[in-house]
Image 1 (cartoon, one colour):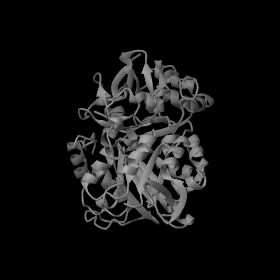
Image 2 (cartoon, chains in turn green, purple):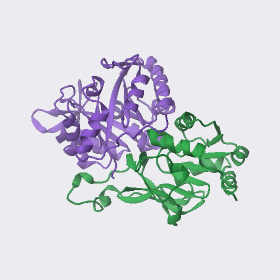
Image 3 (cartoon, chains in turn orange, red):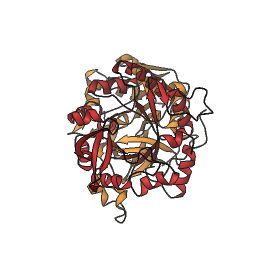
Length: 220
Length: 262
């Protein structure tokens, strides 16, 4: 059974349907006890980091999430859900995150600054923000979440901010868009994907299937 | 590898039925948008656009149904445009399962709608569609038109593109009214001029007739994504054929991997 933390930030139907497609039983909840008792947790995130944290906080879900993580429950943050794992974000001011992983969330260099990062001869390669579309990931090490994927699979990304972890050991896979940033973070039972697996066709469904069937609780 | 350029089939939907898609011999019901969406999903489309051309507001609930059914089984991004006039219209469509909404004439009547939509749902959800026509007296000027190219707005296309971006659009869908339906290729000059001025992705639309046209939209027009309707509907090319052609010309593409979850 997979529990999606539903804290009022928009449409969770896609992630729910995608998990069901790969055979998972899914429930949604914003109940603190249900989060603590969950077998596996998914934390989606859409929109602004600060707004997401405010909704989580107003529902009293920060401590239940931290408790579940500390008890070894497999945990998957998706998109802003990955970013929320970190200590803070610079999106529209400074906002404190869940602080499960050390590091912060920063904006991609803007289009003008980014132009200097790429081949100056090719003006069409100017970076556009948001980073929107299909990009490849490069795994740093092996993990059950990455099983049965092709060599450099494409996933669908939509974001203007990315995590900058303090410890490279928390990075499971990277993607390059002007800068190299974590596409997947991982520490013990905690996983986060910057892309949208529910919008990433077969590769995305495979990741969700792996989380459902292959990721096991962490012995604490 | 770099960020892949996207191939986007567009479906016109009228009262819950796809119009124009006549050559779908493999499909049981060629008029069913959900079935066509599934077909494009399997053939490697990177994204889908549904354009709701239903005339009456009362029939829009049918579109919500179509979007819900599609989103439940097609796991690639879906943009829905047509008849979206208010933030509430956007909310309903996003809640039905659309990932992005596309606004056109409503944004011209009320440019602040772009900002309100971006504020409520994030810029990544807001696509501004622009229909542009060259002004004959000066071939390097394009005017924005609405109502399917019938009504002039007096707006300069490049300036409107910049304005829409500034107001919070996440993406621009640029259709050349001069090229639409001609199969002569996209208006790459228009695309390039917009692409050079804005910092958000640009989707090329209007005029694709060959695989080379799609390549040119990207290499000459600087587009981040290319949209086409008839070449896919009439099976002139499959999405997979187009993608392998573009990949061979060195354009980063997401090529379909072997099925591994079915």
